[in-house]
Length: 219
Length: 215
Image 1 (cartoon, rainbow over the protein chains, first blue to last red):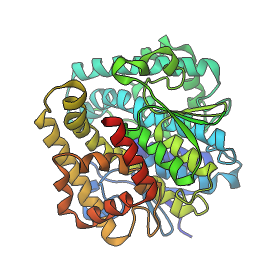
Image 2: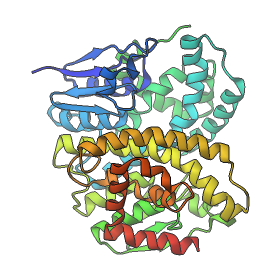
Image 3: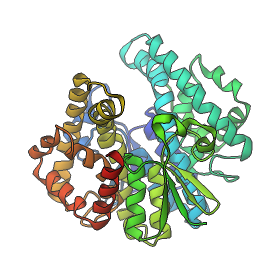
C-alpha cells in the first residue's frame, strides 16, 4: 500500500501544518516537492489535486484532499487512535467544540494578523528579493498584539488553548509562528509570558522540532 | 438553562448557527446584541466572545464562539448527518469544502456585503465600487472552481448535502439580494445548487429571521 503523500514540502507553512500532524500520529508518509518558483502549483497536474492551485495537497489511497486544516483533521482522525494520539477529542462534544473554536480562532484571527508579517519579512525577501513593506508590518504587529492579549488571558487560565490538554488547536499555530519567530519581531512574544511558555512547550515536541528544521527561506 | 445564541440574525455568522439549530430541531433563544451602539465590544459580551464579535453561543455551562465551530457542536449533539463523521473520506470532504467556503467564497463576499449593505443601510454612505469589483473578480474565480465541482457532484462534498453546502447560505442570501446577483448566471450548476440549498425549510426559516432583523 502506497504511503500517504504530501504535495509540498515543509518550507510551505501550510504544508508544514499537515506534516507535523503526520509526525504526531507516527505513520509513514512521503513528501513530493512542488516547484513554486516554476509555478508548478498552477499547472494541470497540481490543479487536479488542488483546484485552487495552492499548496499542500494530500493523497491517501483514493482520497485526495486540499486545505491544510481539513487535511490535518483527516490525518488526526484516521490515524490518531491507532497511535494513542487524540488531538481532536471527538469522544467529548464539549472538548471537541473547544478544539474547533481555537482552530477557527487561528484561521480567522491569528493567521490574518501574523501571516502578512511572515510574507513581508520572510517570504517576499526570499522569493522576490523585495524589502518588507513597513506599513503593512506595523499594522499587522498592532493587530497581532491585540490578538495575543486575548491568547495571554486564555493561557493564564488553561495550560493549552482548548483546555488542560494539548490538541490540534495548539499544533495548528506552529507553522506561521515558527516563521514569525525567525523575524526581528520575535520579541513581541516577550510581552506575553503565558503565550511564550506555550510556544516553547509547542516547540519542545519532536514533530515541530523535526519540521522546523525544514522551514528555511533565505534570500 | 437552554440554548442561547447572542447576536442579530442578519449577521451571516449568526445565521450560520441558527440554520444548524433549525436543522436539528432544538429550541433556542436568540438574544439581541445592539451592535450599532457597540454592545458587542463591552465587557458583558466580551466575556462570551473575547474577540467582540457575533455570534456567541451558550449551552448550559459551555460558552462557544466562531460560527463554524458552534455549527459542528450543534450538529454533532443533534445527531445530524450533515457532518458525515461516521465515514472518514466523506467527513474529510465536508471539512475541505467548509474551509473553501471560508477561504474563497465568504472571504470575497464579506467585503461585497459590507460595501453593498452595511455602508448604505447602517452607515448611510456610498459603496466603494473598486472594492466591490475586485472582490467580484475573486468571487468569479472561485465560482469557476465551484462550477467544475458541481458539474461532477450534486453537492460540494459529494452526492450528499452537508454543512459545507449549508454554510454558504448566509453569504449567498446577501449575494442574491444585492445588485450583483446575476454574477451566478454564468455558472448554471452553482445557480441550481444555491436554489437547492435555499429550498431547505431550515434555510427558508432563517432567511425570514434575517430579513426581519434588517428591516
